[in-house]
Image 1 (cartoon, rainbow, N blue to C red):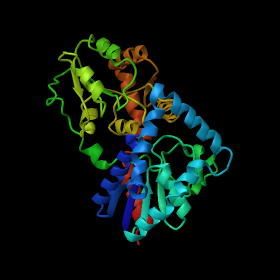
Image 2: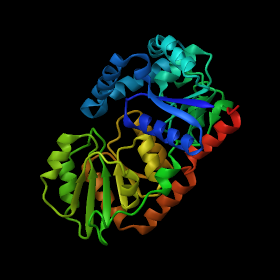
Image 3: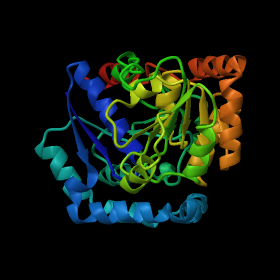
Length: 358
């Protein structure tokens, strides 16, 4: 069996999730490859797609909120959307690639290639939902199965999706990410201090200087800030000269950083939230982009897996509260252990081997 995994570079979570699935398949000696959708169908459209996505995040995500709402409204009309029509145009190139490379099964972590595969009709595929809801246009796709988090099936059923198609193994995080996570506090010159990890993502959030300056006043703490690909923010934070602050850019050992921390503050991306909960760390969600991130936040908050904050003052207050409330920390970790499937990727691979391996 040969499997093709496809994603799009609109938000890092889609690609990261695809690579987790690839890693798990290879761990099980299944031939598989990962490709960016646009590298197959239209390389020129790749940068344009990335730019359009990033432009919707400007102004604290207000544009994204409008686009998301429009998508939800269009989904209710039951008409074929412009999103479907545009992605249908790529069906010949994608189908040719699948045939030429003798692909038996496709797994996609993004709606765009899912709609192209739906237009092809001849190729078995799985659509992995990397957020805690059925995003707009999901109902237009026709995969063999939707891979989703247990507990969000009503979102899909309400869109007219057959419950029999819902595979509730969870958002895939590779077993290696979890089991290989190690304590690197010594490497970071952290002794017995309480450690706060702030995962900003490439877009950053809020008034980070205000948050940092207030946190530096807390005794016996270390603050690790990961800025991702945001070089401007990295350089800005590096100017703060304080031994309690550790500023990192793009990292390849996020699992070690999560494992080595006492509390994690993060944007509520679907995959990043799942990663944190898989390692069982008290979590504070901050500055959700209206739409998907709001839904992700509410899922975690309503299941007692995180605290949600909308401004700098709430973040500071809740960090202090969580640092000093061991009972709340334990309750949060207990809820994460109950709801998040640590074997999500391996369970998905087992299902594939049982149902698609010839």
